[in-house]
Each structure stands twice: as structure tokens, then as C-alpha cells.
Length: 331
Ligand SMILES: Nc1ncnc2c1ncn2[C@@H]1O[C@H](COP(=O)(O)OP(=O)(O)O)[C@@H](O)[C@H]1O
Ligand code: SF4
Ligand SMILES: [Mg+2]
Image 1 (tube, rainbow, N blue to C red):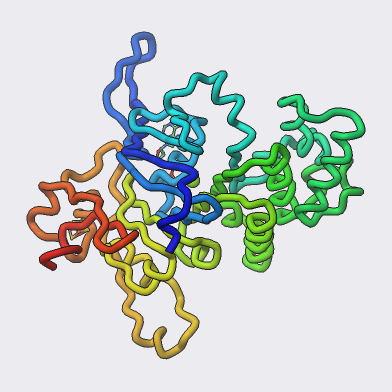
Image 2 (image 1 turned 180 degrees about the vertical axis):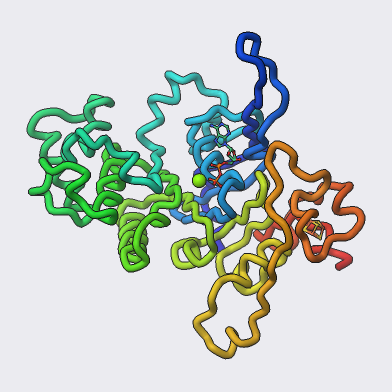
């Protein structure tokens, strides 16, 4: 559906391994946490790509490595055709305004000693784009844009509710007119009643300002509403990626199928037929991922070759990518 659209962000075989070291004086590298381990995908201009997976599978690291808040261990990231991974820190600084991040824990992300006006205005002060009266006006405009009363500019984060604080974080992220925003579980910490309001706000802003999102969540129901396409992550890898409708109608990877079986279906007939797939065991440590397929220790469809050969991540239909030996031609 969105395949012919312009690519805004391209990720090529991206890896981020955090070293595990031992020794206090002479620290020695004894292993690595393979937080992100060779992922490739595009994000199209104006779309929302949902990124879903259990806690610890590498979602936040993916967001940070795309934005170059962490430099990758290997692989490449392109933004508007520019290779971010080849830019110096100075060159990246000039591009920073265009790429922003919204965090899950808005309270930790906002300085509690700064007024909301200062928090929202700070990126403009740092980048020297506005000052004095113009800065005040722009802050008021941003607060109104996210549905907050501009008269609250002198209030402090603790005076706001969780949902309002998330709006402050969104206003701050919008201050420099970004085109791409990584939304890292932006509603996971909020009351269910507030979640929809913030998701709706993000959608409205996307339409109004022409934004492109990578929207991270730990369960599928959270991305269903907002995403145009969805990528499913497990232990540092993307195991499946497809348009939202295709992924929900025809999940092909056994891991996606198990996640899907946990999503409540509003239709009671479908709900009665729904088969819960309970996975055995826990997610292995990213310091010691299984050989072959990363999902092989928990997969209900595992066969001999799964624990020996890593399945190739490839398109099985137009725009539908899967990494599984048992999906595709021959099965
Ligand atoms: N700065 C870091 N140093 C070392 N390990 C990290 C760091 N950040 C994340 N990790 C590890 O990388 C893995 C993926 O983490 P993360 O990207 O935060 O996952 P998610 O966002 O999906 O919960 C986890 O095992 C986590 O402990
Ligand atoms: S490759 Fe094998 S272990 Fe991995 S998801 Fe497919 S069937 Fe399961
Ligand atoms: Mg995270």
C-alpha cells in the first residue's frame, strides 16, 4: 500500500552490541549484549511504522541508534538520503532538529526544576532559533498545539497529570519543526482512559504537520490503531514486517501469531474461535542468543534446521517480510 511512497528513513543491517567487560583496572571485553542484531527496513514519508516486541527485545535501542543517540556497532542509517552513520557529531547536530524522540517516562524526561515554558522553549534556545518575545509566542503556540493552556507556561511538571506531561514532551519535541519522531512507548505508562487521547493527538499532529513516526510499543493492540505498517521484533531481530491490515489478517511468523493470539478481538464469534498460543520458557538473554533462528527455543513449529541455520529475512509477498524457514515457497 505504502511501498511506492518516498523513503524518509532507511535502515540497513543495523547492529548495536553493548560490550560486557570484566576487570576494574584493565577492563577486558568478555562478551556482548546483542541488543540490535542486523535489522533492515524503510520508513516512508508520512507513515507510522509500529515497532512491537516484548520488553528487552531491542526496541528503544533501535530508536536511539536510528537517531544516532547511540552510534551503531555496524550497519547504516539514511535520513532523507543522507547517511547519518557517516556524519560527524558536528554534522549530525545540524540535522538534530529534524529528528526527535518522545519518551515513555515523561516525568523522568522533563527537568522537574524547570517551568513548562522553559522546557518547551529550551531546544529553540539551544539551537538559537528564537529568543525574547518571539520565543514566548512560539512556546504559547506549541502549548496550544498539543492541547495545553498557554497560560500554564510558568507551571512545573509535578503540577500536571501524566497525560498532560506527555503533551509537554510532545510540544518540546515539536519545537524545532521535526519531520521524523521516534515515539518510544509514549502511552504505555498512562491510564488506559488517557492513552487514546494522546494517540489521537499524535495522529492529528501527524496530519497537520506532515510528520513521520516510528511508534514503539510492547503489545500489538497499542500499535493497531495508529500504524500504517508494523514490524515485529524478537531478541534483536525483526522477524516480520507487513502493512497493518495484512499483519493482523495474515500473521505468518510463529512469534507474531503468538502475540496476535493475545490480542482481544472485539467480535465475540471470532473471539470464541481464537486459539491462545502460550509460549514455553522465557526470552533468552541477548548476551547468548540461540544459534540459528532466535525464536527456535520457544517456537511451537521448530524443526531441526531452525537451531542450525538462521532463516533469511525476505519478502514472501509484496511488502510482507518474514524470517522463518517454515514460511514461504515450499511450505
Ligand atoms: N546502554 C546500555 N548498555 C548495556 N545494555 C543495554 C543498554 N541499553 C539497553 N541494553 C540492553 O539491550 C537489550 C535491549 O534493550 P532495549 O533496547 O531497552 O529493549 P526494549 O526497549 O525493547 O525494552 C536489553 O537486554 C538491555 O538490557
Ligand atoms: S525458523 Fe523455525 S524456529 Fe524460527 S520461527 Fe520459523 S519454524 Fe520457528
Ligand atoms: Mg524500551
